[in-house]
Length: 323
Figure 1: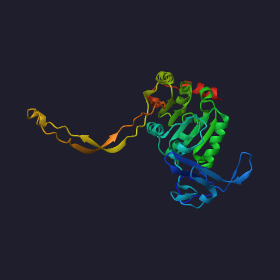
Figure 2: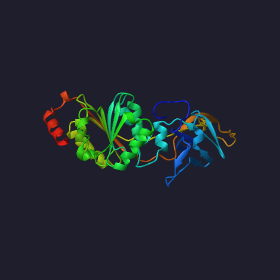
Figure 3: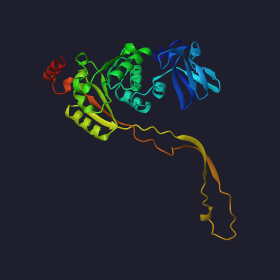
């Protein structure tokens, strides 16, 4: 499918991003038939503010090409994790591109990395994770909600990403990530109401050579408890940050030039008034409003096992509890 590598033309069943304006972007399926709410097969027609689009007509079109609508036109784009984040169907609150970029960088993800994610949610971050670790890496993602897990699994398969991700319905705070992942992960990401309960399980899932962990929390009280647990369990380099995106508008402005000639001559009533001199300059104008709080990102490092207290006995106890 179109998420797994780039292609030139749209094929039957591909997910396509329809771009109309910067605020009107949609994801649609390039197929001629679809099931309605009564589960009856009907013609697949997508309604837009600029007219109806028969989705079957997209098959064979070139990605990036301009298509005509009855009241205007649009462009069909190749789906990417960034565009999918904008257009995906929301099952939960999602993480957006500014936070996603810093998460991937701080977790030091690369092709071949093994990553654990909890919870899956709407799959916004999951798509970016998969792109970062494929083709040789793997994402193990967990969600305590069974229906969301099933929907996410079907979505990954539909996007051609099923071979890079394993979706599991599991309460990781209570039961951990499973015995098959002990010592397998390079990094762990937590997006949970009580992330400090999952931190002890993360220790045993990270490789003996160490790894990175990240927790996304909207409340500072969650951050405090998580940092306390990370520190108690031997994690190092603990830091919390917040990412706020600011967009500056580049404009040409006229700036008045201060005339200091009046300091050189005595003031008199006969002084001729001069027209104020202005200088044109290119400058960046800050936004009138600053976006508010999104969430806190807490990062920490687990050093290699030979640099921290031996956990062999605890490993044995932990493995026995999972059986």
